[in-house]
Length: 151
Image 1 (cartoon, rainbow, N blue to C red):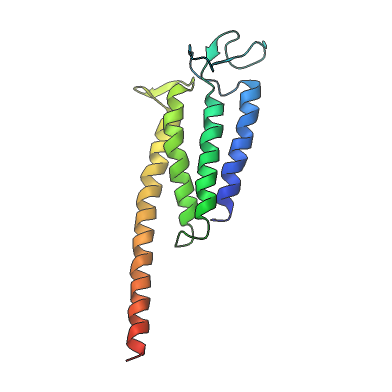
Image 2: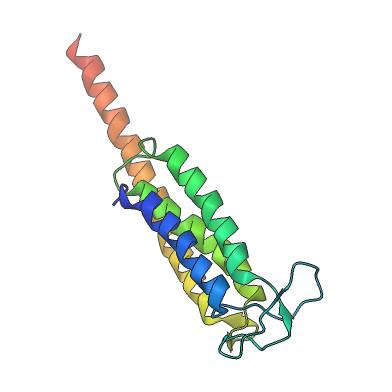
């Protein structure tokens, strides 16, 4: 599972290039100078209205996550920890990016993506902490066992 984490997040960044081109993950209206304006009638975004470039924000976040995951590969223990870390980190960023995406609200101001991101973080962060603490206990037991063999 850990081997897939860098590839998955990089693939997600590449996929968001398509979203940027066809306007299917458009952002809320903005007056910021980097707002995207879609002019093609078949774009999913409202033609002529400047919107947050939400897919570009996600591309940038995905590349940050990729860099962190790439740097941590082989270092996080136990097996599966890198995938859990990637899922938690991606969800953290997606939670904030979703505030500028044009999506229907589900629970107050929260969109479906907010709720999914919160759910993923609520599962992965405690699981990562639990598994890391079990690994620490296991390593301490091994060290104690190795130390007692020499006596």
